[in-house]
Image 1: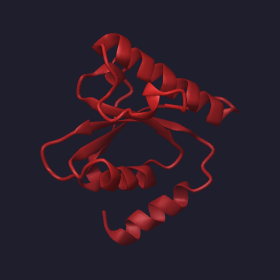
Image 2: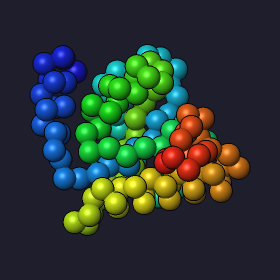
Image 3: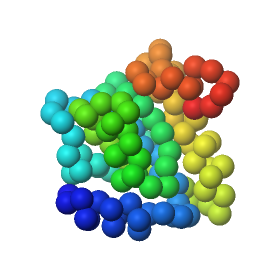
Length: 122
C-alpha cells in the first residue's frame, strides 16, 4: 500500500461510527499493509497465535501505530464489528469478553495485553 493510499484510507476511517475488534498475531517477516486480514470464526480470538486483543474505529491507523509500538513482525486480524447504535460501549464489552475468553482458554493473558492485568482497562 503506497503512502498516499495509506493516508487516504486513514482519513476515510476518521469519525467512523463502527467499532472493530482485532487481534495482533506474531508473524515471521516484517509486516506489510496486506497483513491486515479478517476472520469472523468465533473461535479465532482464543487462538494461541493471538498476542493482543483490541478495538478501534480505524483499523489501518491502529495497525500503523501497533507496528511501531509493539513490533514490526505482527499481523492484524479483524474478527468482529459492532452492530448496535452504541458502538463505543458495545466494542468495549466485546473486547473485554474476547480477552476473558482468551484467558479462560489459555490460562493467561495475551502476551502484550498489559492493561488487562489492572483495573485501568483492557
